[in-house]
Image (cartoon, rainbow, N blue to C red; front, side):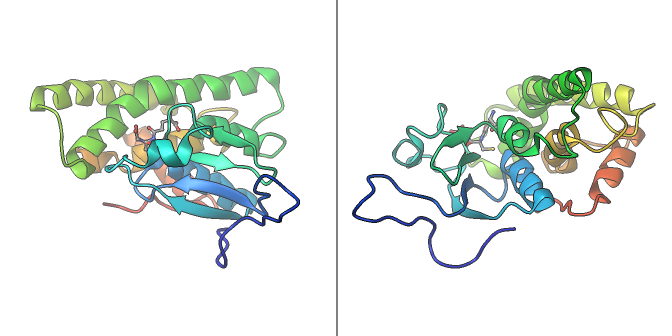
Length: 221
Ligand SMILES: N[C@@H](CCC(=O)N[C@@H](CS)C(=O)NCC(=O)O)C(=O)O
C-alpha cells in the first residue's frame, strides 16, 4: 500500500546517509513498467513512498537517479536499507522471490525469465513504445517508424496468442510475475492503436489477470 504522510527518510547528525523507513519508488503514473511495480507492491502489501518523475521532460533524470539506476529510468526503487534497484522485471523478481508469485521449481523460474525477457525484447519495444509515441509523446517519429514498431508489437501479440490458446497463464497455469510483467502494456495496447479483437486468448487472459484480487488497471490515457 502506498503510505500517505510525511516525506520518506530519517536523517540524523550521527549518520552520513539517509535511512529510509519504507521503500521509495521513483514512479510515473502512465508508465506500464512502473505499474508492474505498483502491482506487486499492492499484491504483497509492501508499503512505499513514491516520487514522480516525468517521462516527457527528462531533464532532471541525471540529478535524481544517478547512482540509483544505470539507465536513469523509472521505475527505480530504493530499499529500506538504502540499496537501489532499477529495471521493472528485476524489481518484480526481488520482491516476488519466496512468494506465491514466483515459483520455486528451477524450470518454472527459468520459464518466468523466458517470458520476462520476451516482454523486454519483443513486447515492450513494440507495444509500449508505439503507445508512448502516439498517446504520450509531444515529439513522435515519422509514421513509417511508428508502423514498423507496430508490426513488431503485433508479432508479440501473436506469440502471446499462440501460448495462451492452450494455457491460462504464462507459467505453471497460475498467476505469476510473468503475467504481471506482460499485463500493463497489453492492457493499454489499444491506446497505441492496437486492435485486440483478433486475439481472443489474449483478451481472455487480460480478463483473468484483471480478476485477480488486488490487481488494478493502468489508468487509461
Ligand atoms: N527496461 C526498463 C525500461 C524502463 C523505461 O523505459 N522507463 C521509461 C518510462 S516507462 C523511462 O524512464 N523513460 C525515460 C528515458 O528513457 O529516458 C524497465 O523495464 O524498467
